[in-house]
Length: 341
Image (cartoon, rainbow, N blue to C red):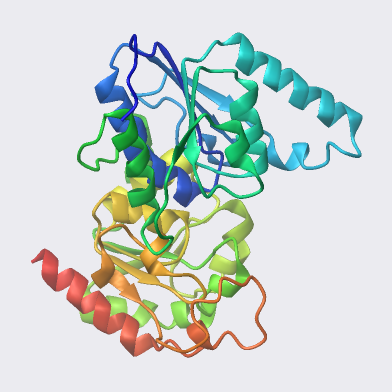
């Protein structure tokens, strides 16, 4: 455990993306805040995920990191100058403690550039990110959930404790979600989109759930997602399409109100798991042991075939999800809803 001569007064948490990863890091923020209630805590995050953190009661500052823009810095002098400006800003803030949960070159480099006296990351961080740390958290195996790895960081800091997810959702966000669903008493919320095409259960399978969800379980179907997933969601006939009509905090409120969530391996799936909602999580090329709904193994539906998990974003056959049956999903729906009774 790290010994602090004085309590940190300025803390930076680096976890830029993706939505599910940011959700996994929320318990770490909670434990840092409980250990050092008077500290100024900042979070470095991409604009696409910042909506989860803006207005968060345990955060003092959200620092935006334009990841995709900075990826062009070698051929774009303006992007390079912006990145150098960001490093100067981070150094100017004089952080006492920096925690890098991303573990990639850019996050490790930014960690080092803060010149904070205590810089923590994982010993197996990729792309030489570990060079930016002066305290390395050993990782014995990757066959553990991401949250368990993150908790090893808080153990090193002496601020371990229970896993608790605190969201930034406000009463205004909840009122917005209530207004969207004011004519629907009970609903199942479907998320057919993902950032990897190989993680998508066929949209036709999602569409086939609408009728049995109504007849067997008395649930209307709502489809959620980002603006870029609105067209995909429109293919689910008979459902209310709200994809693209909520920001991340409003989406969290919409999930809060749902009676059931059915989702691919995606950010909204992790939000639903964190909120303790009845959940059916569809897995194919990724490993639920590492990135599944935390301590919700019973909600995972997957096919046990030799090539899964493969962690590939391209696949010519997608057998792991294409052959995952509608009946298997509905059976798990019944188990999840019965467990609530």
